[in-house]
Amino acid sequence: MITDKIPSSMKEKVRILIAEDNVLNQKLTGFMLKGWGFKYDTCANGKLAIEQLAKHKYDLILMDVQMPEMNGYETTEYIRENLKLTIPIIATTAHASGSEKEKCMKCGMTEYLTKPLKGAELNELIAGYIFPELADIKE
Image 1 (tube, rainbow, N blue to C red):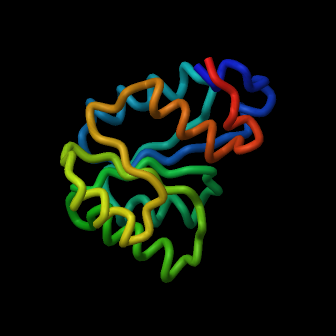
Image 2 (cartoon, rainbow, N blue to C red):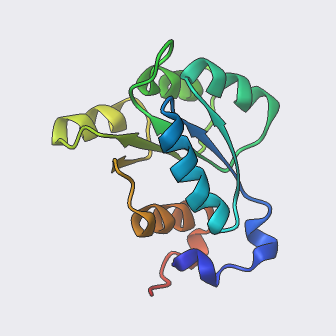
């Protein structure tokens, strides 16, 4: 994994928000992040994600697009338009289509991953956005 090449002292400073309503997906994603040495928080919908952003500074958000109360599209638009944050937001969705990806990008998401998440792909995206100077490192 690319993040294996990153010193622990740098990874310990990273904080990622997982906005996901499915508890199993939260746990699986959290297990990967913890294994790579990152700190993370979870929340089950967009309203809670916005509350978390008011309390903590995050380096990246993994945003499920289908959540109750406030979905990932609405949450991302709020983050971009009201909070004026440029934080990388990676869409996570079970919908694998070009129109879905376009919809995610249009509302302000930075990247798009389909579920189930693949560890190597997620690891590479996180490394590329949080540590862009290391983005050219290949396995």
